[in-house]
Amino acid sequence: MKAVCWNGANDMRVETVPDPKILNPRDAIVKITTTAICGSDLHIYNGYVPTMEKGDIMGHEFMGEVIELGSGVKNLKKGDRVIVPFPISCGHCNFCQQDLWSLCDNSNPNAWLAEKLMGYSPSGLFGYSHMLGGYAGGQAEYARVPFADVGLFKIPDTLTDEQVLFLTDIFPTGYMAAENCNIEPGDTVAIWGCGPVGQFAIQSAYLLGAERVIAIDRIPERLQLAEKYSNAETLNYEKIDVGEALKEMTGGRGPDASIDAVGMEAHSMDLQYLYDQAKQAVRLETDRPIVLRQMMVASRKGGHLSIPGAYVGFIDKVPMGAAMNKALTFKMGQTHVHKYLPKLLDYIQGGKIDPSFVITHTLPLEQAPHGYEIFNQRKDNCIKVVLKP
Image 1 (cartoon, one colour):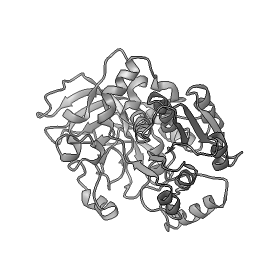
Image 2 (cartoon, rainbow, N blue to C red):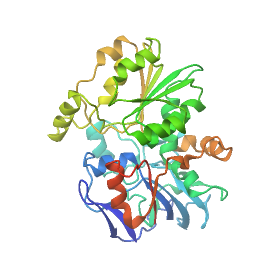
Image 3 (spheres, rainbow, N blue to C red):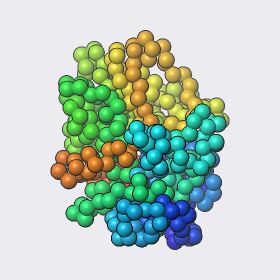
């Protein structure tokens, strides 16, 4: 089959690789009809995620048709149309039973490697390094799905692939980010990053009762989408001081909640960006926590900070004094996708949201390297790339 393979930083290639096979009775093989490039894939593309190996198959946002089932999968049949949540979860461990699906105890065969860095291992993830399982991803023609009786979610034929594809990751990620803000009626939510996850966080904040959402970015087309489609107030951090603007817009109080939808490759217009970039280049720091610092200072006293943006290691110059003395609450984590699927599917079917609004480019799988380039470089007004095997 054809698959998008990582061959080093900024080097994605579409290669011929062996077809996946059933390895466990709870496995399924899915013929992929639609997949996508996620913003967190760009961290791999840019070389910042450790334990990648040449030839690893990329991708964790994908869906398709079941074509083969292991003997232990009784709730699915061949021909079922399914989406695939990006965390791989067993469904039976203590964490899965508590709806903490991305913390599954049983799905990372390389848990020992993650434990060296994190103390304990989260779940395995599709196409996201050997530290998180070494699983082949879904930017391919076919994929093996472990724990398929838990991990595959059937989709009605009345909805298009483009309407439901993002239930695999970025729609639940934006929703969980907003839910983690403990939003109350009348709240103002500030969201750093107007990429796809930021766009869904805006929509979700309103669904959960926010009165105002202030979206922060520098890319014109992203700011326009946040403003015109999602009804957010917008700030371009290239043109204004975000902290001062937020203070003025909230009557000197600060936002009630803040969301970091950027993560480890954040950018800014001041010296801290050069400082972080230099330390990251020589591996004295793995992540650039520019947004995190801004949120901690800008948030109101007693505010909530939510972090869906991906971080992989260690950060520097974090104003913990501000966080402690202002009594800030932090919530973060990889998304517990399975938890949100029934509710978010209802939102789509009920017409409250059509997730396809973020798609700007649809390409054949063979053009995936080009898709990575334009997404990473923000070329051609690119916000979200969908791939068709």
